[in-house]
Image (cartoon, rainbow, N blue to C red):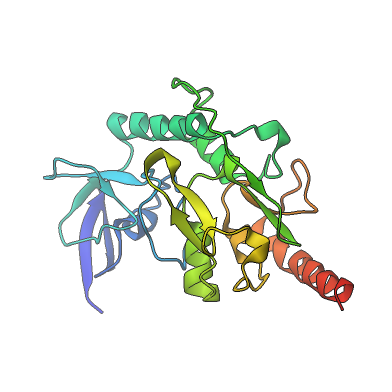
Length: 239
């Protein structure tokens, strides 16, 4: 395996050829905010929080989808990047309806964590208050589009890991939203296997277990046993 050398914030690191700039920053011990990225899923660069500066380039590069190359010099925490990341998080809050006090993920939300990480305590942008719906047609889970940030983790895990292809992104621009099946109620999509992977990978409280109430979303490591119990109960009740 070929090895390349580059610098991250002035620190030289050696990494395998073909890996991303995100892996290079991790090798250098640098933590970059992430929302759409999840190890094991195809990177898409949707949230734009992992943008970095590359010397010699006049544009910011998404670390998760940009391949590292020999001799690169990248910077991860310049004033420009810090301001940009805070602005991006503020826009996430302004664009959606994120009422943390009433969310199942309150206290265990990646969007909350990133807001703290970038130093956001309010949004400078006017809130849009979009009219979005909650789909609770599935017997075990529900999706609240008010909390969705379009990271597409649910789309990718269902496609790449479960192979069920339940989720997709519909419409355009500010009207983009996650759709189930052929834009059907989730409970009517026969392809859904009730696996709950979309619930586990959701960084906010957008997709959740119906039995969860305010601040009751569990960490990913605690989910498997509860999910199995919920599936077993659903099967038992419908026999």
